[in-house]
Length: 216
Image 1 (cartoon, rainbow, N blue to C red):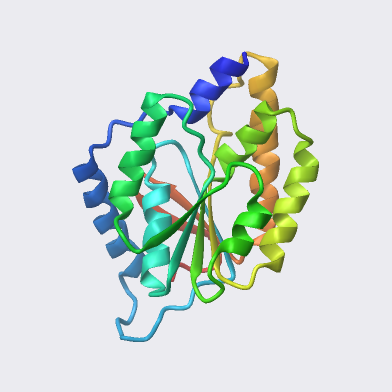
Image 2: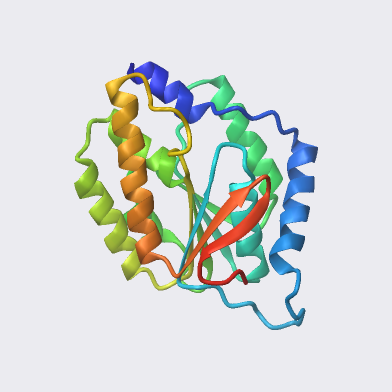
C-alpha cells in the first residue's frame, strides 16, 4: 500500500510539455496582474500565502508568478524526492520551466532549516506541502509534531513565503487505510495553513481565485 500511495502522490497525471508549461506561466502572470496599476515599484506580497489546487491545475506556475511579480530575490524550497527516472524527469521539467534567477534548496523533511537558509531580503516559494507531508507519512514520523514545527517556522520567518499544497478532498473515498490517513492529514494541514496565511488562493484550470484576502 505504501508503494501505491507513493506512486499516486509522486506521479499525478501530467502531460504538459515544457512549451505548454511556459505558455501557462505567461497566462497566469497576466491573470495575476490584470486590473493592477503597473509601476516600477515592487509589489508587496502578504507575509504568508497559500496556493491550493489539484494535480496539474497550474498552482505551481501561479505561485511562481506571484514570486516573480514581487521583484525580489527568489528562493525555491523543493520537497520532492526523485525515487525513479520518471520523477527525476518531472523535476527537470519544472526546473527548466522556472528558468534562472532562483536559489533552489532541496529539503524533503526539515523545512525550518531550509527556511533559515533562504535569503532574508527575498521571497520564498515552498513547493510543495503535499510532498513534504507524504515524505513524513511514508517515513512513519509523528505528523502532528512535524506540522506544528512547520507552522512555527512559517510564523518565525522574516521574508514573504508562498506555500503550494494539493487539494485532495474532492475525489472519492480512498480504498485503503493508508491513503485515507494521507487524505485526512492533508486536509488538516491545509486547514492549518489557511488559518495562518494572509492570502489563500485556489487555482483551477490555471485560473486563480482568492478564498482569503485579495489577489496582488
